[in-house]
Amino acid sequence: MATDHAIGIDIGGTGIKGAVVDLSTGELVTERVKVRTPEGGRPDDIVSATRELLAQLDGAVSGAGPLPLGVCFPAVVKAGRTLSAANISREWIGLPAEELFEGAFGRHIHFINDADAAGYAESRFGAARDARGLVILTTLGTGIGSAFLYDGVLIPNTELGHLELDGADAEDRAAYSAMERESLSWEQWAKRLQRYYRHLEFLFTPDLFVVGGGVSKHHEQFLPLLELGTPIVPAVHRNNAGILGAAALAVL
Ligand code: BGC
Image (tube, rainbow, N blue to C red; front, side, top):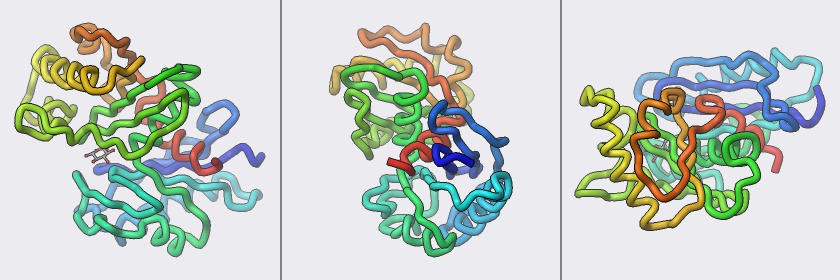
């Protein structure tokens, strides 16, 4: 397999998924494989589940040496250490996660925040390709993840899902999980998104918003309901963006 291939793995609250990516095209060159995130999301259990998934991917590209490997995760990640735990076990706080995974898998890994990976993927291969100025990508899922890209350069760990807005953590009200939990209609949810994106616009005056997460496939149900001064577009890679970005960042 050519050296412009890498493996991306996206660890989430419900599933861990991965694939081999062609970095020249941004396409998956294997099936996307997936395992369930172990109950409780504890570090050792996640390492074991990820090892199982990696074995399947390594098997899919047998013949080559181990490919570069990027892993993205729903937490602040600084110098390979996970510093927060909003929707996962608190045991991740302060953990040298990159080192833990490298020790367990016996190879070099690049460990990053999941929304940063998704933002980088959209900037390199998707909705924000060639965009200038400030692009803010948000992922609407269990939580809200965010990525800042300025002229295509990633500014990591922005954590805009945890802005305090109207006395609440923004993701508790505006993530897709809030819509499901409270059985909101698209219109009701869009009102919360309007409040959230308007606030981001006020704080940062971005040039483009990109909206990711699985729900972005239904973008026509809620994006047209938003009234903003900033263009807002759906992500192109949705559930694969974390995989693509993790793989691409692994070789930087
Ligand atoms: C976490 C972020 C993560 C986002 C999306 C938030 O709760 O704090 O680190 O990017 O969820 O998974």
